[in-house]
Image: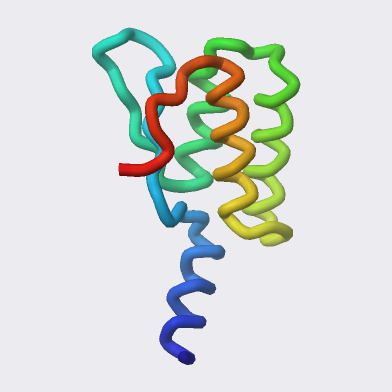
Length: 95
């Protein structure tokens, strides 16, 4: 039980997602696999096709909350999925 708690704590601290998210933010032949809060934040800040989307901004706020230790990674993952659906770049939320 203690080992499981340490694994969970490490996942929260590093911001890794339990299941990866596959998106296609640009060209059709360039899929991207997002496996952590840091990956999600990078895509949201650099490669997002709809920069003025309210759902994108909510996902950015969720990523920041996880990075500050205020929320678990699943919160950022879910917000990222919602934003990716809104931007029509979501290919899959698990592999």
